Amino acid sequence: MKNRIQNLTLTLISMSLLSVSLSAIETTPVEYKYDNEVGKTLYKKCSACHGDKGQNKALGKSDVIGLISEKELYISLKGYKEGKINKHNMGPLMKGQLITTTDNEMKTLATYISKLQK
Ligand code: HEC
Image 1 (cartoon, rainbow, N blue to C red):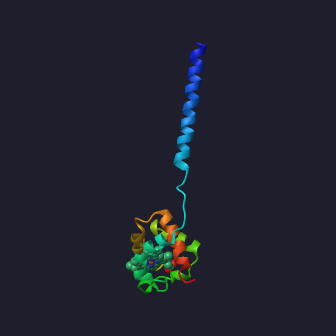
Image 2 (cartoon, helix red, strand yellow):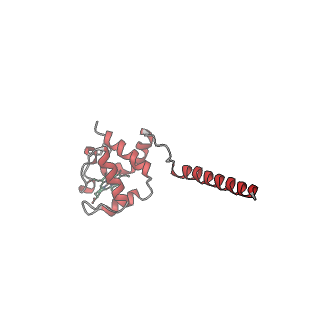
Image 3 (cartoon, protein in one colour):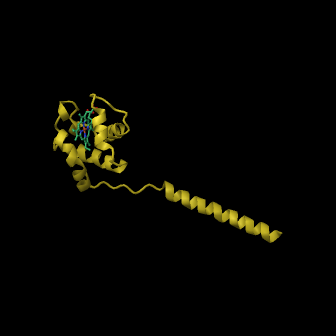
């Protein structure tokens, strides 16, 4: 009987250790590192409307994104992707631009765009 309890205890301990290590895997974010070349590639399709230095009012509507701070750019991109921003009545168009863009790619874009006019 004592042995069975010991075995059960050991099983429970190893099960909880396993779940701790599994949840550690799930919650550890992929390490993010800014890469200017990735930014350049991602920005290519944006430059058609916003200009290669972010200097244009896209379709005569948007603000000049080259003048927006990195933090504001990220918040803005995230908002468009989630369909929460429609500042100049063209939010859905911007949502379409970002539909397949990941969070790390939006971070990269925000950093890249914020450096364009410097
Ligand atoms: C087809 C033209 C077009 C393309 C391509 C495009 N945009 Fe836009 N963008 C717009 C328009 C129009 C708006 C204004 C949206 C609105 O009504 O809020 C806008 C808004 C923005 C804003 C917010 C500016 C403001 O007024 O606050 C940011 C930031 C932005 N775009 C970044 C990007 C990025 C990054 C890409 C590439 C992934 C991109 N855009 C691609 C047309 C475009």
